[in-house]
Image 1: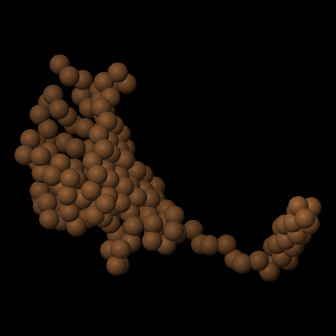
Image 2 (image 1 turned 120 degrees about the vertical axis):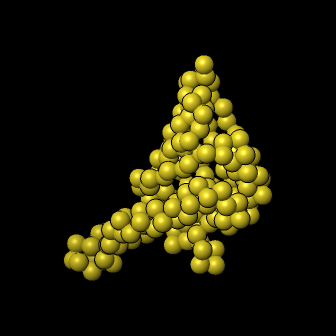
Image 3 (image 1 turned 90 degrees about the horizontal axis):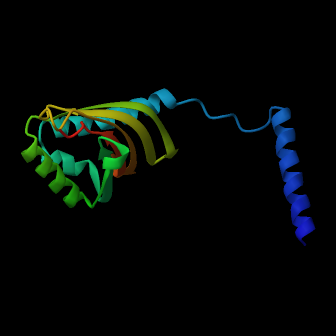
Length: 170
């Protein structure tokens, strides 16, 4: 039985190659990378706007209810700190705390790469900078991977992971 299954799989693979060779296979998908990067940049701009305006209601609207946000940061390998924040409400509380501690902070975000994993799942790689911090706290520069899901026609952040370098503590 195992041999028969192997033969069937091999035959299917060869048939598919034959169709490709004769030009009868499905056409390849068009390269939509520019469109997808633009989509991710638009969605990231909404986060930047909400952050820079200290609009917690808009920040909350950008995340799924069960989202998680994790970061690894430090001035060196020996001084790395990790945090995982789970759930939209907790994420918003952390933004609120950050805004109260660093009221002049400003976020800048640049999407470097993005692709659709599924029609309703968008992943992007970005670089970011948080400026406007006291000299001993910033600027904070880093990279982020963000996964967004399409919910009722709206892209929401389900997962964000970022790694950043902070200034050396003096």
